[in-house]
Image (cartoon, rainbow, N blue to C red):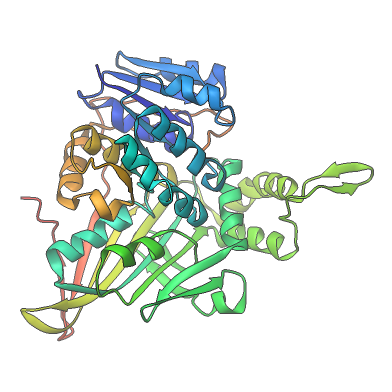
Length: 431
């Protein structure tokens, strides 16, 4: 009997990861774990297959986490913010001897997780970290280019946008603020350079980007971990950047403005005799204004795009070759874009593909053809409902049921720009 636990299984990302797992015959028991007992029970009851249960679990309580991991074969961690929960929950999985997958997109958390590599190897545990959208599918597509399209990869620019999800939770906003207030490492000319998103050195990298199915938007330096992991696994790489934004811009701009005002501190301040934590006030204010800003911008649904520009050389055709991947949707946002890859990564490890002891980013152990082939098999089985886009479980408790009817299509468009200026459209070549 195969038992998989999804931590944060009632949030917008965790629910999609769980739905992806639920369509597999290889999963006998699927456990949704969430701090809200009433919500998790209702979510489990909404699935259209046997073997799905809900368990109340508190990520801040080590005993609670240990209890839910007992007897599990694999755990998918979708609890954010990862700068708080990433390393502790990975350590708990290693201690429990449980194969681990997460969607960690915080740089500092990734560094802390990579430091647990020795512990994981000693325990014989495989941990696949950052298996979401960016990081995650971004890393996999870069490896696809390196393995199948180019003989040498010299530069990688990863750009991402999403917005319009029905709701967002506090963890999403805190992650976004964390990105705006911390160092962003960029790999430029073979060396690491540190910038800040809102400072002049970071603003120098802001560029307008045309996103397929979404539109043209400015993207900003993000402290996502691809910039520190890709140089480890791609010899000859000279450049790696990660840039992102959220739409509508008025929503993203409000967050930047609050940070610039200094309203993102974590130390309490006294206001009219009451203690207030600026960060908590800012998060509440942004969430309270979100629907108004969506309405004013005419945004009525979720959309997103992951764009990856990989440049390098080919031995059979001298000169610079650039491959542009666009993984886009006009109907799906962060929940699906992150949760589906996490579920696929878990199914891949469950089948034994790439399951090597240690802590690994996606490009280290994920075979692109295996994952993309798995996606071809799994996506037609998914019927996705509304999600809240919140990686730690949003207030609406939305869940996703799996059914044989319905289909999710996540198109990957590939354009190969040749040295002579011509552009070829490519297929994935999954055989």
